Length: 445
Ligand SMILES: Cc1cc2nc3c(=O)[nH]c(=O)nc-3n(C[C@H](O)[C@H](O)[C@H](O)COP(=O)(O)O)c2cc1C
Image (tube, rainbow, N blue to C red; front, top):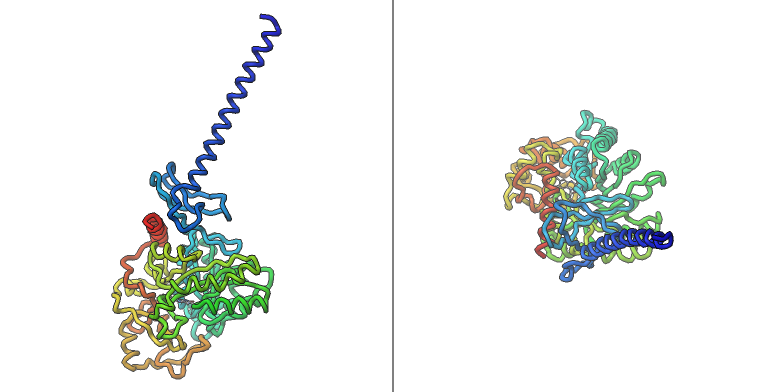
């Protein structure tokens, strides 16, 4: 063969080899692109949500995906060939991203401390330490209340931080007389989020000094309150809430409703969530700041979570369900009272602090209702609005007794659905089951 033909042959082989490689690359790219197209578009036509919120799974047994749509989204799913699953989206509050959009509601006087909060944060939710009455857990809590509160809050935040790298918050009721102390201590300790309700936290942003990245999240019971706080923060501090928790009338603890509003469907959480979203929209538009809305109060299972996400909520706040976990910081007797409760045991009390509260009926409450008084010396006027001189008992002491398991003299706050709690599980088991139930609800929708 002449040199000329030899060269042509070598060139042809070279060309053939390279074009084959090119073809293979093109096929691979097309396959990858096609697969993404299926993923993003499949089976979503019946969904009320945008098409790119559904995903088609045919390969994974348990996957944890990121899609490049909008803000990138984490998607949790289970295997089921050809199944379209609405993802449980992460909850983003500023630069914080909770993989699971569940906030564990703060539970005061020792019920949600470092143990519970860190366990929830470790599972991808937001764990919350409650500041109310926290100093009563200290030996000098009755004699040196203010210092004891600061010391214990600092210690609980540090303990929780040691136990998790997840997101941690502190719940600080506006009505606490040491509100400012609790806020400054939390910010100094670098807490991720402050949740604040039981009053309007109108001055909360003034505590931020610019050096700390603590997020501020008001807890409200109406769209009006959400708008009022936002307007005041914007005017006075050029700051908008980083998220809003809207707590409906089925929640446990003190409620932001008049007694007659509690069972009025016009005040249901289903009504409140769209109302708060609507009220917040002008602020979101004006400042181009995402302000997630988190729904709480009576949310019991994954189906409930699905319902409120469908209504437009970005996440949920749940408290009662977290009491019946091993990690909850209350005594086992407190948890057992939840397990033993029936639907008739849940009642609304007139709390000495001037708000209605939802609690479990027991001997102590029956005595109060029968007019029996438990004389006490107010150790510290811990709630600004507390009418302690005329109250038949000290609510802080009664809550502390219950937390310690002295149910005979104790008051246990609980949400409307407490009677449905059946067993004590780990936080992980609870969170996993909530996610699974959510997926089932999404699938059946
Ligand atoms: C035992 C208990 C104590 C609570 N303590 C507080 C508190 O200190 N501050 C607060 O803002 N909310 C408090 N709450 C309300 C919860 O944070 C939460 O928003 C509410 O209970 C959600 O409803 P759910 O319990 O039905 O999930 C408490 C609730 C319970 C059950």
